[in-house]
Length: 327
Image (tube, rainbow, N blue to C red; front, side, top):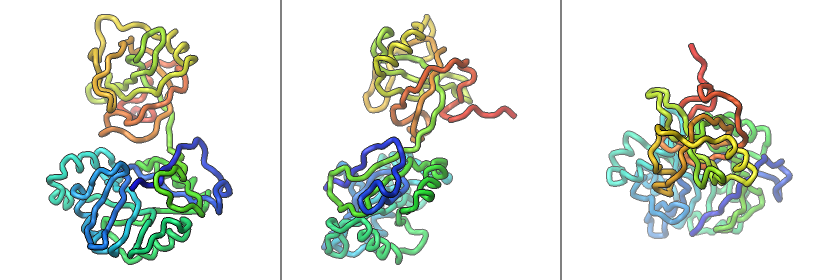
């Protein structure tokens, strides 16, 4: 089965924007997970694309088996907390080390944040409105004792509360908000929900471009490492418009004999990419979400906002949003 999906929006909608009102939930940075307890009691977890996650999270599977009735199906997000923050890289590592998952679960437990119910105890709730499904889910999880790997996702109809979540929870890795129509059914595979992602603006240094110097397609961005002092790849931009490409091309200078990066780079899932190296002197302001890949680079492509007239020395270090104050 395919879960309900969400499409991105660039503003937080008012409560009256949804049929029956809007319900707001935090957007957790984890693995989307459909959890199933069959009529025979078999328990399994699958990702949005159907990847079997069952063996990677035995602590969650055990709790589902103990708490959820047979003939049930729940929707949620598997998350991992590290030092008080959501850690997507730790989730990836847990899946990669799933052969050792039982040992890792004892020292690095993960959690399942449940936010919807499709079936419970043999009853199908997909055609019920979200408000009714929520009441069923709250009744189910009310009996789950605190400290277990199962948690009820937060939800509110209060716009002020939602704005508080959006502003305050970004520091712990919450990506933003998911907005859901209160009357909506659970229609698998359809984009019935909205996602309003928390983004920040910051600066980065242009170290290379894909495409050509005359018509860059995207920028490859760098940040200086606070420990080594070297310019490291921090991420890349989304595809540039014709206007953006013309503006940035006028500022770029081909790299001389020395450049801190090799001729090919691994950028995201695309593998080794050939690009054009440029002198790392042009600073740009970007809009980025808060997710990082193992703390070394922005996991998602960032959006170019403008060229900044500022020295590279004033650009924040590592992946910081703001320049660190000197003691």
